[in-house]
Length: 432
Image 1 (cartoon, rainbow, N blue to C red):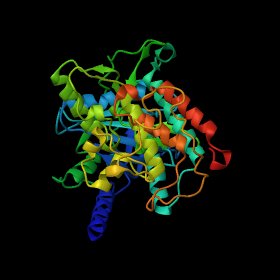
Image 2: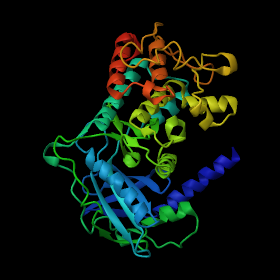
Image 3: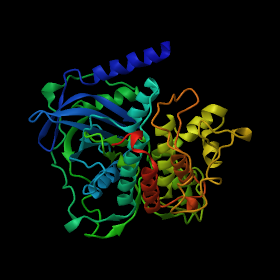
């Protein structure tokens, strides 16, 4: 506990140190005041910023690229994904972006992406609140949100180019430059966290460069391509300001799909990419141990959807829960399909899951059938035996968590199953 408090004080100190004078940042001639840090991960930092002219709030994602062209290329792939899906409802779009050159290193750059700010937060925020308050999602409301996520993924798995090929334009060459009078010089430090936040100083960044993917091939109007998100999890699903619609975010993990693994080197590269960009408790088993000759397709997202739905119901990923319960390796739990619902048991704690009872070996209609009534909308204690979960929803999770990718429903089938489950849930279980 004491260590947690010390870590909190340390983090707050760094945050206050980060922007001592509430500096401003310019993105393509628009000036933004940086209010606070919203989150961080790896070399990415997300800040709450305010347009100084309109007072409108945005989320600013700052991606540090300290390792030269390769890391810049990865960041620009994320920017390209925002451009690709800008016309798709249910997937976050970039308002603007720019690329800043580091004066101290010709190869290092910082990519800024201006995103909408959603004040309701994400599904993980709601899960955390449920755990603290011993409450739960109304099942019907949850399933409507889940259906929205499935439809956003459907647009990604079955992507079509926008009308007339319209996409976000490249940024201003001078965008992203900070106002010197709003900053104070600070001493450099070797601490990674301080290096990252100190990157806002003018000594680290100067003029902007044009985006690096202006020659990227653009999908023709109506052209069909397929992509997988590869990092579906509660923290990557925002809730719009109405509270009724989910917004799929964080497109840094998006990959063309399917990908045929034709060599051992490609298998290793795919596995390494997944380890870097796909969150372990929500990662599909085929990404833990990529085999030569395998095909990695959009089924990975269906697996992650199953983990996400379970987490919304129980409070954490099924494999995270099982690993915590048994003390075993999380990756071994995933590869072995070792998970269960809180009210289920069996020899060795084995779950009743994908190869039993729920029609998991059958894709398509009827797989979500399984009798049993809804949970009645009653509250559940996540930490004391778990909540009561409707049997149709349980069977839906079992379908998604089939270890064999070919046994999972595709996104069209999953949408149909979710719609059937919603039809079965009583109105008094809550609603959107």
